[in-house]
Length: 440
Image 1: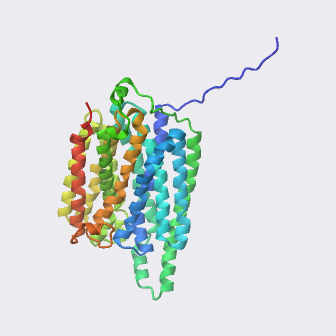
Image 2 (image 1 turned 90 degrees about the horizontal axis):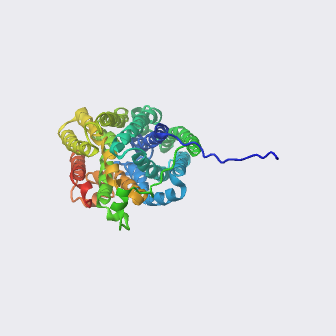
Image 3 (image 1 turned 90 degrees about the vertical axis):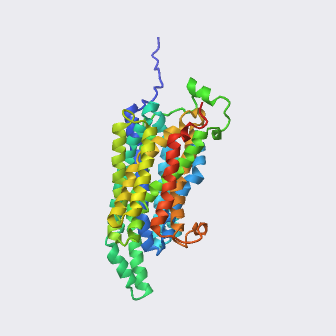
């Protein structure tokens, strides 16, 4: 008998539940870090590119509108690549957007900076379209809100660190620099100061690009298991029988609007808080850290969510309480002054913390084979983070693209109140009855 070598194809070992959660947690940390740099960038670009409030808030417009335009294409990409490869591709796209900051800083071009932010938003759109349903589906449905709360701690921990790190580099001595720029004797001296300030952003964003590229490679080589969202259990199959379009799920359509207004109020609380403080007469050296205060409050909210959901509270009940707190803190900020007003805005982070973990699972529940496209529509709703700050600025800034909506200007405090309260009331509506619409 001749000796024969038998070759066996052994399937690669897949990551278990804990390891999968750890990998997704790293991804949530990444897009939390990149996203919450925007609060610092708004103040940085306002100085470097000599912008008014509405122009500076185009940072959020460019970043979040990428979600609107690219979330649906992201779902088609994920159908081709699968979740893991799609997430790795998203990391690479964010890295490319970060590298655009190099020529943008050298040219001191706000348009080019916005292009880089849009590309970053495109990568995050792909990353979030994959990672959020993955986190919802990877374990029991009852604990989906708890899982996303755990991942939210990764996200908001990064968000709390991001403005601290970037501000310490790009806005160091910002008050003195603003005075030096204002006192410059000629255009040459002024441009030299502005160019020097603009160059500060290059190092951090090159570092971000390198780290993201390494993470994309490691994710591609990881043992993260693939999830088939096209396979339905008996209950889901029965619920989706005869459905030919994702728009036949009213709880999803209403959920997209809920995500839209939720992300709007989250961005207002986190990214606009610095502008609010400046409007109250506070210095840039003080306001540059305000975003971190909001993120710390959000972290506290996530810890509360992990401790109480689902043992004491359902995600739905937590969303109801959160919406009510949002209204109360907004009204309190309107009546308060100085640092008390800023404190109440920061506390909106506490109110906002449990919203995404509750809304997303509620909206995609029972979608079955429509899960990927439903997730893409929900991620598209993140565009609210770009639109609502512009509506806010349009109420008191005649340079805003939304200023035509208002016959007369009001002050920034009234504008904040009029923007935020209706958003929280809609979230309360969705938490009470919106997610039940269309369900038997």
